[in-house]
Length: 78
Image 1: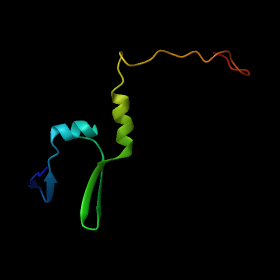
Image 2: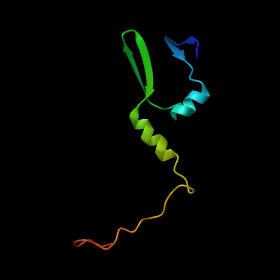
Image 3: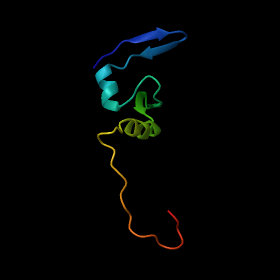
């Protein structure tokens, strides 16, 4: 896919198409890692955003109930 590079203030910007952003589970405030190696630029979501993305998908339909763990061991009080 070819995308245009545009001026944004004193910097340059690339717009990420919606379908690619959804595939990567990133949004407008997601942190990204930008690296340049041997003249090749790579951009990938920062690992911390993966957990936030997974947690944000929890809802009443996929949230499991408490799981009983058996009897207490030691002097725990519940």
